[in-house]
Amino acid sequence: MIERYSRPEMKRVWSEENKFDKWLQVEIAACEAWAELGVVPKEAIPKIRKAKLDFGRMAEILKITHHDVTAFLQAVSESLGEESRFVHLGLTSSDIMDTALSLQLQEASKLLEQDVEQLIEVLEAKAIEHKNTIMIGRTHGVHAEPITFGLKMALWAQEMKRNRFRLKEAEEAISVGKISGAVGTYATVNPEVESKVCAKLGLTPAPISNQIIQRDRHAQFVSTLAIIASSLEKFATEIRGLQRTEVLEAEEPFTSGQTGSSAMPHKRNPELCERVCGLARLLRGNALVSMENIALWHERDISHSSAERIILPDSCLALDYILSIFTSVMNGIQVYPENMIRNLELTQGLVFSQRVLLSLIEKGLSRQKAYELVQRNAMASWKQKTPFLGLLKEDKEVTSKLSARELEGLFDYDYFLKHMDAVFNRLGLVKKAKPYQHKAPKTQGIETRRAP
Image: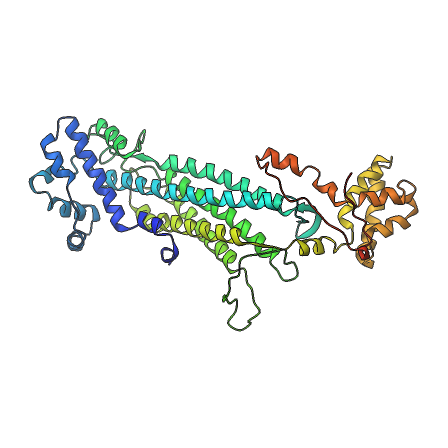
């Protein structure tokens, strides 16, 4: 199902044709290495390089052998004739399968790195665009203090940069080959063959192996994909929260002719972000399976093999898919600054409570006493639905320390934006953003002024 929606490039990586082509590449590289060591006649190599696999013939043989590698070898041998005796010389199935799998994972990693890079670019562009687009910050789902939508985007961009680094590390972990024979002793294959094969294929020889490349490497890879997917779920969940009808500060794209419900024509649902969240859960489940695959009996069993045939392609296909989805969401995201201001002022100035607290402390009050005064008025503002500033002006204990003019000066949204340039410069996002502009409704009793 995932494959149906994935990009053609990623589908090709995990196609049977590409898998068996990689097997053949490894076999040919091994023959070339043996020839360089004088074991295989050099005159046999040109014909071996032209070896082909008849998929139909392999399928026929597989019905008899019930072993894909022996069926593969027999089908390839039939395209060669006498030179076929040099193919798979001294090797075991996992030499071919695991080394070829590393090549597939490398290809998949490169595509995922491109996806991640594209998302970073979009997020950074949105961060710059909305650097000063002020909105309420929420903790525990409750209004806290103002932030900007650009700051949120910059935070996501930095997380994706860490994911980019993790992905490169994971790619390095799986970019190893193994040509060490049945249980890793090199008894039937010279270690130089392994070195030469890996060099030809762009891999690093595994420093030591038994019959397989150790599965902690693959677990690291799949776990990394799951971490990236979890980041995407985090971002998508935030958009879902911001798209709620009573919030509506941001909204995923909704195209002409699109429908949100079979029953309710008015619906505009965050279905793309919900799709990202659902598939992220699938990837985390695959990560658990990849860790279960680390423990095998003795030098090898094949309990990992059947699971890997599902989790490795599906994880790459799913992440490629949801990265593409979320990048398109961020490209077309609808941002509603007016609603952000509306929601920001729902609490009628309570977002300035900490600033009032700090000012009272600066005037000489103990933190405990200052907190008590501010909270008393804040709770009254909550219950009475009365502007916070007005209540503070009427509180003699407060006004004994802060004049009405001083209090009004504290209710300034620019206070929360004063270090935006420093943060963005530290992130390397130095392009100019639109200046912040806002006039608070007088009915709120909040006189919002620009900083001098």
